[in-house]
Image (cartoon, rainbow, N blue to C red; front, side, top):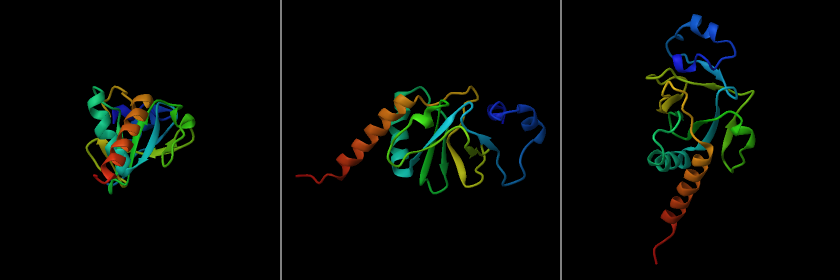
Length: 145
């Protein structure tokens, strides 16, 4: 839980509250230490597959249980500048449900766990990976001659 303690506006209460009840999860404000870009599941999974070999370690990635959406943690301010079909941004003013590492909670699970050092996904690298993933999907759907 230490990785998310600095995320609330006042970290003191987060330490005092302790773990949530079974099945509970912290609700953290986006836009302060990170934003989240939410991609549709198929594109998100393919993007993560492209991204992983390009970087030592991507930032945290959330997935819902059906993997119909993946949320990539990126630097704060990214969501307000992002324009992309089917991509939603959660930045300042938004709240994100995050499971405790090692637990699946509230309909979400970690696809890539936070590393405890604040590593985030580079939005430029994420965009390149998205384009590559989308191109691969189109090539895979083109019938062979």
